[in-house]
Structures are given as structure tokens and as C-alpha cells.
Length: 362
Image 1 (tube, rainbow, N blue to C red):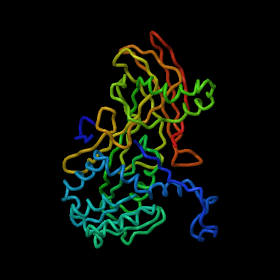
Image 2 (tube, rainbow, N blue to C red; image 1 turned 90 degrees about the vertical axis):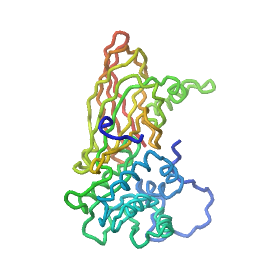
Image 3 (spheres, one colour; image 1 turned 180 degrees about the vertical axis):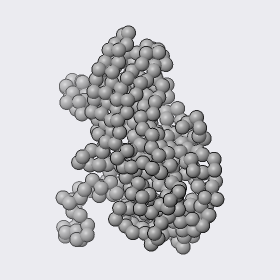
Image 4 (tube, rainbow, N blue to C red; image 1 turned 30 degrees about the vertical axis):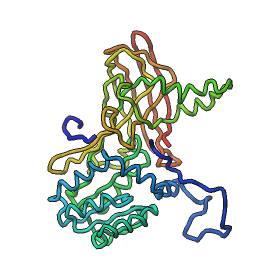
């Protein structure tokens, strides 16, 4: 996809600060879950109520300007159309849609950021053309039977983290007209191998000797958690291959659970400490297709890259190939988390590996 498209291109904590002080002892209202009743979805939506996470996303110019260009450069698609913004946040995409000539936009978000979005829309003079609705897409009703265009920034770390794709698919199937438009409509995730010994030492091997103490039980946990961080392009030692290719116009929520075999070819003599995953998204229903990439070789985005470390390094020579199989599915207890299984097989001239690692991205 990178060859066909014009590609435009520190995570903050997603937990809200919690005060140990309690100023009110009365029970919560009936419609507000208490701490014992709260689910992962409640905490997920709470995290998006804080302005810092929206600041980070808006300052991601690769992300925001690609959406802006895709919308504003295609007024012929938006003129007099009805638009649905799924997970609208600050309503920036909804406002782009109206600027492009949309007749009306319904902007939906479950978090309380919708209160600030409503004020933002009013301050910018869009109150008559943007209707903001607070609630879960799966539970709300729109005042119209259908929409012409669906816009959403649904992608998470490792593309699928937080499972918002399910919500986009639900909205598509319920409201999008036949031959309707989705922004973006394509997404592909890739995997490559990397040499990252210095960072691995700092993050993983650190637990071998902590002020003279053996803390390897934590190392075992750390190895099972993918790391979301910026990968230096120089650390990539192989080519990259796609592991999932999604057409948002036709995919189902079951497609987000996948298994993919891959073969990576080393481009130099080096070591492999782990595997790097990144994704690309494309807007192909527009006049001139465009998109963006979260590759280590492209400009920084707030999604960074996702690293899957392995315990023992692989010694690989230029031209040798490492094979693997990667599987991904939502966690049974919390569908917004991901269970990732990685099998690696290598028969090289200087090392041999046959290893399976189970990860959980949370």
C-alpha cells in the first residue's frame, strides 16, 4: 500500500489521576456505577474524558493533517451529505466535514469530552450543523435513518488495541447507505525484526540484578507485555511483511482476530531481539488516494510502534530467513486488551530457534 499511496507520514498515561481523599460519603446516583460495578468499558471511556489524550492526538500532525486533507480536498464527496463521526472526541473531524460542505454531522462519543466538544462546536459557529450525542454507538439512536459518510479515528496501538473497530463496523452496518464512504477505508499491519539489545537490557534484563537482588519473576511478566515505543529505523534488520489487511467497507468484527504466517529476510549480519509491528491506513475512496504510515521509517505518530521482545537473541546473517506465525484476538475478560501469540522458527548458520511466546497488550 505504501507504494501506491501518498503517505503523510511519549504516550501519556490513559489512567486518570485518582485522589486518595474522599470528600463525599453518600452513594452515587442510581445511573452511575459504583467502583464494584464498573467495567473495563467504563474505565476506557473515562480515560478519553481527560484533555491530555486529545491534546496528544491533535498534536499528531501526521494523523490529523491526513484526515484534514482527505476531507477538505474532496468537497465533491461531502457536499450536502449526512456524516457520522464515530468516537468524535473534540469533534475536529466533524468540523472538517462541515467545512467540506456536509449538510449535517452527527458526532458521537461516550466519554464526557463531549461536553467540551459541544462548547468547541458552539464557539466555532457549527451548532446548527453538528449534533453531538453522548453514548455508546451500540446503544444510541440517530434522528436519521442513514448517513452517507462515516468518519472515525478508531485505530489503537498494534492497530487493533481497544477494539474500537467493532464499533465502526456496527455503525457501518446500521446506518451507512449502500456504496457509502468510510474515512479511512483500508488498514494494513506489518511485522519486521529488530536489533534492540540496549533497550531490551534496560527494560527486560534489568530485572536480573536489581541492587543485588534477583527480581526475575518480574522479568517473566515484562517479557509477556508488548512495548509501545519509538523504534529507531536503524534497528530494523529485516524486510517487513503484512500480517493483516482490512477493508473497512466489508470486514467483520471476526476479522480482527487473525493468524498470519510470515517469513522475514535479513538485510545484514546482526542479532534479533524482538519483532516490530506497525500499520498504515488509507483513504482510497477519494479523488486522489492518500494515507499515513506508523513505520519506523516515517514521521513520528502517537501510535509509535509495538515491540514484541524474545528472551534469547537470534544470530542472523544477511540473506537468511526467520519464519513465524502470529495470532491475535481480544482477551476474553477484557475485549479491549489483546492476546498475541508469536511462534518463531529459525535454522541459521550460527543459531537455531524454535520458540513460542504469549503476550497481552493492555
